[in-house]
Amino acid sequence: MGRSDRGVARAPTLLRALAMTAAAAAVFAVHPVRAETGGSPPAPAEAAKGGEGGHGGHKMGAPAVPACLDPLPRCAPTAEPAFARDGTLWLAFPVGDKLYVASSRDAGTSFSPPVVAASVTGGVIDANGEARPKITALPNGTLLLSYTARPEKSYDGAISLVRSTDGGKTFSAPEPLLDAMGQRFEVFLVSSNGRVYAAWLDKRDAAAAKQAGQAFAGSGIAVGWSDDGAKSFAGKKILMDHSCECCRVSAALAPDGQPVFAWRQVYDNNLRDHYVAKLSTDGATLAGGGARQRGRMGDGLSASWALAHDRRRRELACRLVHQRQGAQRALLRLERRRREKLLRSAKIRRRREGALACRDPLLEN
Image (cartoon, rainbow, N blue to C red; front, top):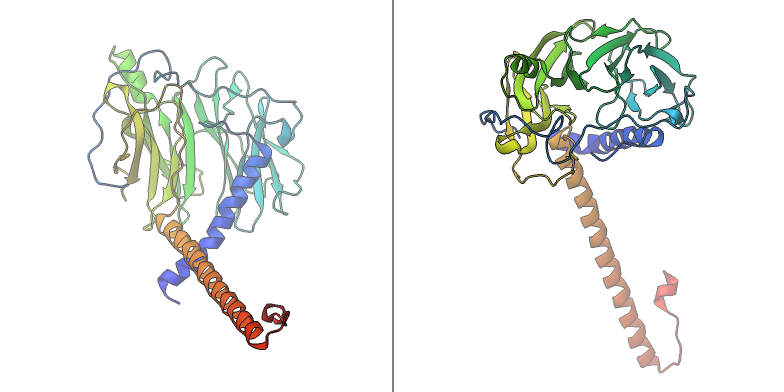
C-alpha cells in the first residue's frame, strides 16, 4: 500500500475521532457562535477605540448563567472533551468556582463521578464558548488541565495549570503559567515526540505600552513548550503583537511536526482578520501570513473558524468521498442501462408473441 493509500485509509478514522469529540462537546455544552506564505508580519495597527474589544460591537463572551450548581456537566456553562490514547473520553467542566473532571469508557454513554481538579477564590473561571478550561491527555497518561481565573468585572486574567498522574483521581496544586496578569485563550497540542506546545493571548506588551502612555491595539500571541510532561514550560515569549484580544487561538501540527497557530489579527484602521503562522524549529519566530479575504467583518459579527488539523488528510478524505460517490453514480448508470435493455427486450418479446401479457424479466432478477 502506497503512502497515498495509507493516508486514505487513515482518513475515516480521523474523521470519526473528530466527530466523536465534537459530539461529546455538543452533548454537555452550548458554545456560542463566535497558509503559511512566508510573508512579513502585519504592520502594527492603531489603538482600538470603544473600550475592550473595540471592533464594531464584538464583545468578549460573558460567562453563561448555569442552570444549577450541582457538580454535573448539565449544570456547567461550557465543557471541554479530550480523548486519551486508550480511548477514554475525559471531560473538564466548571460549575461555580470549581473545575471538575469526569471520564467515560463507553464513548460518553456514562461518566464516572466528577472529581474537583481546582477551585478559584476571589474571582471567576473563564467559562464561555471563546474562553473555557482546557484538558489534554498526554501520551504518558498524564492529564493536563488549564483554566483562566480573572476578577468578576475584568478580563485581565491569569492562566493556571493542574496535572494528574493517577488517572484523574487527584490533581496537583494550581501553578501559574506566568507570574504576570493579562493571559487568556490558551491552547495546547502534543507532538509525536511528546513535546507539549502552548499558545495564548498575552497583554504584557499592551500593559507596558499603557504604562508608557503609548497607544496599543489588541493583545499579543505568546508561545511556550514543555519537554517534561508539562511540569515546566520554556519560551513563554510574545512572538507577535496586535492580535485580537477577544478571539480564541486554534492550533495544529504541520506534516513536519511543527505547530501552526491561527488567530484574528488587528490590521491598520482596526481591521481584524485571520492570521496563520508556523512556529520555527528554535521557537523564536512565527512565520505566516494573513487570510486571503481581507473584507471587514460586519458589526457584531464574530469570526467563526477552525484550523484544519492536517490539510493533506482532509484532501485525501474528500478525494475518497468523491471516489465513492463517482463509483455509486457509475453503478446507478449501469443499473439504469440494464433495466432499460430488459424493458426493451420485454416489449420486443410481447410484440413477437402477440401476447397480452408476458413474464417481466425484471421480476426474474
